[in-house]
Image 1 (cartoon, rainbow, N blue to C red):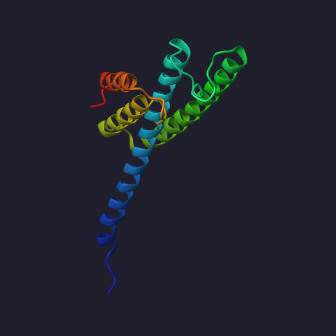
Image 2: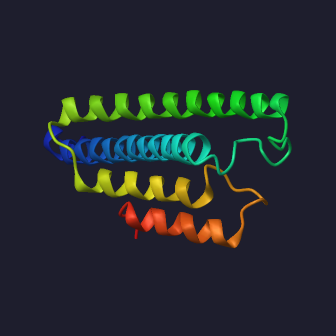
Image 3: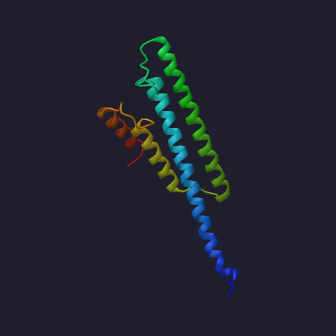
Length: 145
């Protein structure tokens, strides 16, 4: 027995909504990670100079080592830029197609931003308890619960 086209339409709409929600989640995570990476790279690496991307294996205690660290900080910025552009492009596509943003996307971007700030852009053995606390405070100030 064949189903009528009217019975199939709700199934197709539910599938389309689920796909759009997944794409919105991906866009929000990309934007949150990319922007969080920019804050980490610009504020912590360049302005405050608290750490560099590869400062644990190669301490910036000489000019060649500092140049090495600065090069990899630049590569980190290239990566965060690419992730941010990908998230922005996907979000723009979804907004143009669907007409409006949702509060859920903003919450997901804040969560991803908080993860980046809490882990300092990556999880590693050189994180001290104080830096974890400071990162958690920064994430809370940015709106991450």
